[in-house]
Amino acid sequence: MKELEKAFGENVVLKNISETVKKGEVICVIGPSGSGKSTFLRCLNVLEKPTSGQVLFEGKELTHLNEEELNLLRERMGMVFQGFNLFPNMSVLDNLKLAPLHVRKVTEEAATTTAQRLLAQVGLEDKAKQYPESLSGGQKQRVAIARALAMDPEVMLFDEPTSALDPEMVGEVLKVMRDLADSGMTMVVVTHEMGFAKEVADQIWFMDGGYIQEKGKPQEFFAAPKTERARLFLSKIL
Ligand code: ADP
Ligand code: MG
Image 1 (tube, protein in one colour):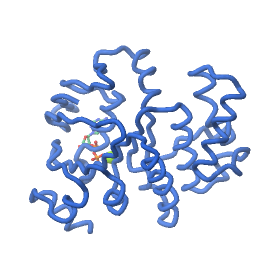
Image 2 (image 1 turned 90 degrees about the vertical axis):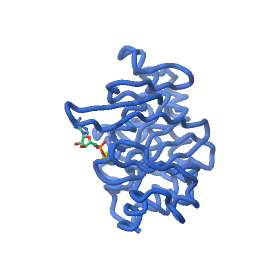
Image 3 (image 1 turned 135 degrees about the vertical axis):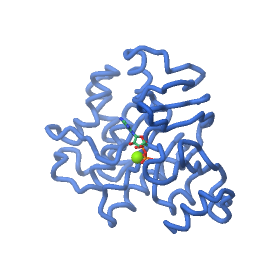
Image 4 (image 1 turned 180 degrees about the vertical axis):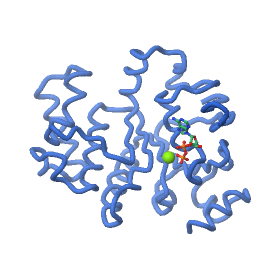
């Protein structure tokens, strides 16, 4: 992103952000509530239209694309939210097959094969026939991750994927994300899970006041944050 700015009316939420995510990198975005993390993530796939500046993906400028072009592009960026947003009236398997069948127009057989492979990857191969309501929160979130992966994305965006989960279910979702990172997936993860950030991130981006105030390797950032704001934030949560 280049000189990215986003305002809601008078409220300037993102101010002049120029950053690059490289292929294969895992970026963990951390920062106080209301600091603009979700807005930032939503600007990356233009779910939120930046007020000014550019978002480039594989060299292509996104902010001027029309909705149709954007939808094609969003297929390349999987997104997982705090809530699970599964389709309640469909089995787990059909949740995973829906977009590949209707958007990518793959065959029924190919969609089923991919869906089963991804369910196995997130440890839920035995849940294919079940409906979302019969799953735990952690299982639903793993299905949501598998569903995003079914479109074979280049990058995965996560917005506090474990924040709505009961504590005992956080680990199973983080494990799936960690495996994904190990497999080389490019990931931008907004999270409050500092253990995960410390162990899995290549870079920590600390947001506050509309800026990325500090960037660094996790070992350095957590051991010795350079800015007063980051020190204060860490002192409150660790
Ligand atoms: P975070 O994810 O770090 O908690 P957000 O990106 O959700 O922060 O919000 C940052 C600021 O932007 C907040 O002041 C919030 O009220 C405002 N904001 C976010 N989305 C909207 C919106 N759709 N309309 C108006 N204000 C918004
Ligand atoms: Mg948020």
